[in-house]
Length: 221
View 1 (tube, rainbow, N blue to C red):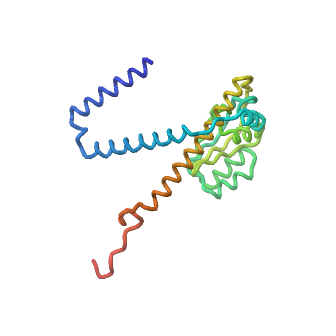
View 2: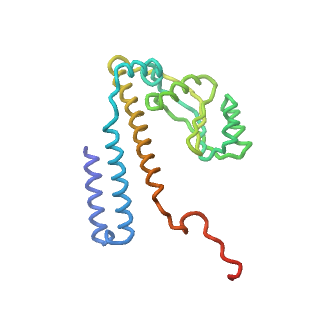
View 3: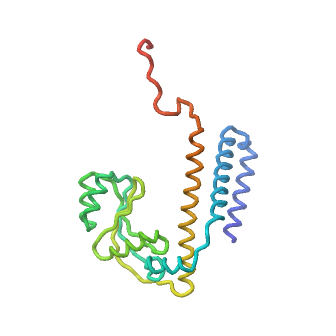
């Protein structure tokens, strides 16, 4: 609470200094304020959508606990050695999916001159996507896992694993929380994507911002 209070005080003091220097009346300030307002409104829209998320039934909780034990009843704290790859070409990704060791994956990255960073990190399976958590713990041993995310990817191997199961009523609470988190994200994504898709059809973009500019005619120097 003390840290939060200090952050509020600092923010207000800095904002007051910015107003004193009349930075709030500049064209850039108007742009930033507009962006902040639009971001806040989008967040409010997402929050309203999550208010309509259906409740999780007891049957759904029981099925989740049976299907994804690695997330709750067989929760693990993992130490993972991994390569973080900021830009992994699709062809190289497919090559790496065919191997089972970090050494082989590293050889493929080096052969394709792909930049990567080697790290060791800790992972709590309760925080992962349940399907991926289940898949991940099954690689324990010498097999590697590959987790692509857009153009980036994480390639790793479990170094050590410590069971930290969640049991009893706490397990049911954890399962309900995870299901609600997934359900909310899916509902928000679907609803906002629909709004954007429907509105995008009515948006007109100035030609100079839409693709390459037209080439100058041949008679112009």
